[in-house]
Image (cartoon, rainbow, N blue to C red):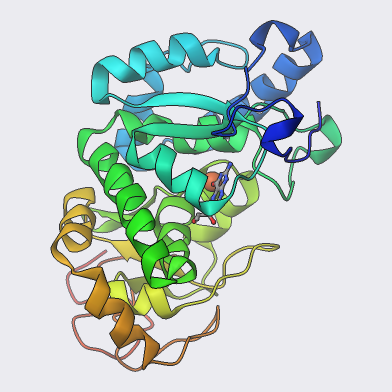
Length: 297
Ligand code: HBI
Ligand code: FE
């Protein structure tokens, strides 16, 4: 089922929500989900942050077929107070932030066709639900997503949505996270893509840069190909703390004075992680190293 974003007048509610209509999915729709799920769950265990798999199990997402948002939301609600609601497609920023600020995750209800198995431009139910929802069962990540929504509503007042959208893109969509001395996936855009789940950890090309809020909010991104660098957070607790402790007003003013950075730029001040296959903890000094630190594998 393909749909383009409708205006509320076309059947969506004023908050852009629509019924998921789970009973309307065909066997072919469920089969596409099952194939995407089977591919990803076969390669993620050695790559994804363990909390993701914990969420998949806790939410019963290991059952076959496209999840029914109603039963998914009942389980998720008991864990972190989040629910999953269906929308026709990309919704306006203010609608998006309002839902996140109220612990409602908006998800597309359409599923890609078999021809689009490896790539589609707009988030479908596999990207939104398999990619994003399992981590919403993690209490700290759940808090971060709500804090992000509230920050988005504030950002609108500063005309700084595009800066905040970069924070979302470089973490929630395409972020990496440290797990001991290894790097792991947590961004939904990577987790829902077979090719990028491999590329983001295995390819030596893209720099892996230690997360820095200002650096991330200055950095543009590409939407039509693999990311050209990845940002690495230390933990969800650290990401939440950095988001809550900053006063975004002065930060936006400060960012206005700094040039935006292209989607493949690196700075001398970047703390780079060793390139795979050595992979390993960040270089403690500011220049790139071609290998891990002494003592790392
Ligand atoms: N709408 N349905 C949907 N899903 C998103 O992920 C989404 C959106 N609207 C805006 C948006 N994301 C981003 O621009 C936010 O960072 C603002
Ligand atoms: Fe997404």
